[in-house]
Image 1 (cartoon, one colour):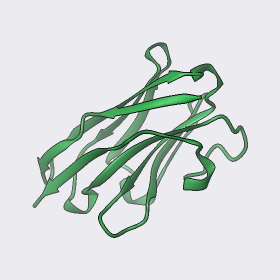
Image 2 (spheres, one colour; image 1 turned 90 degrees about the horizontal axis):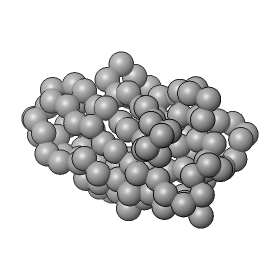
Image 3 (cartoon, one colour; image 1 turned 90 degrees about the vertical axis):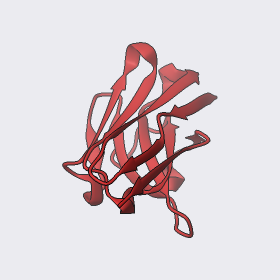
Image 4 (tube, one colour; image 1 turned 60 degrees about the horizontal axis):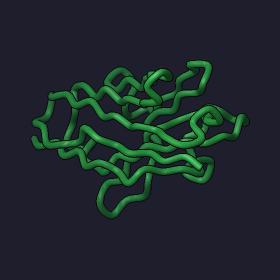
Length: 125
């Protein structure tokens, strides 16, 4: 079992920055990949970025060049640095983790078994 707790959400104007954190606890040594997802009101949950335990990265096209995913293995913490934020980035952001070593690049909701409770990000124009 893995427990995930997100923090760092808030309200910001367009063009601003936020840094999200996700603290992992429990069976963290078995985690192979972690990711950030987001869900806007009335929409489905979509993948934002994923990082594997070897440092391999993948991003959704909509955030390339603006968002950076990273992890601090010593602190069991995942980060998402979000720059040049746009109103369309407004959503609840979720941290996810999984033990599966296949398709590390996947940003499919069904490929992640552990989820945090989410943190709200609101970007105003």
